[in-house]
Amino acid sequence: MQLNINGKSMQISVDDDTPLLWALRDGAGLTGTKYGCGVAQCGACTVWVDGQAIRSCVTPVSAVQGREITTIEAIENDPVGKKVVQAWVAHQVPQCGYCQSGQVMAATALLKQMPNPSDDQIEAAMINLCRCGTYNAVAAAVRDAAKA
Image (tube, rainbow, N blue to C red; front, top):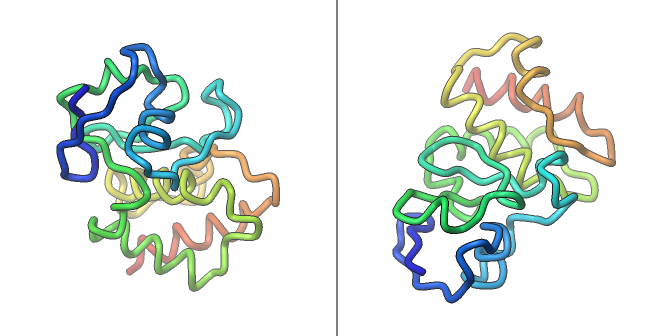
């Protein structure tokens, strides 16, 4: 199967019904996207497809063929993504770090759609789970990235 990942065309040998998450991790060797729950609830697997944040653990790879897939490995190529990563570092958001790639992908998607979100809009959009409870730091980093 031919996939366009992070601006590169890649040939990946997977079944059509394989979740995109596993095509990325096992087929393309891009391990920044994490498996968390497998039922699209936690958000650790968040990537972009054509600029929209999606849960890759429940998205069959056949549904994204011919579309632009962006993973955490390429997020700093996006100017908004670069600002988000800088804010994440400045606020020392990660603790264990497991959920952070999905959090960064979701935050960047939010700021690309809504450059100056209110606190309520940040809370509504940033629904990825964090077992370390870094939600206040996440919100602060999103606010700072919006100002940058």
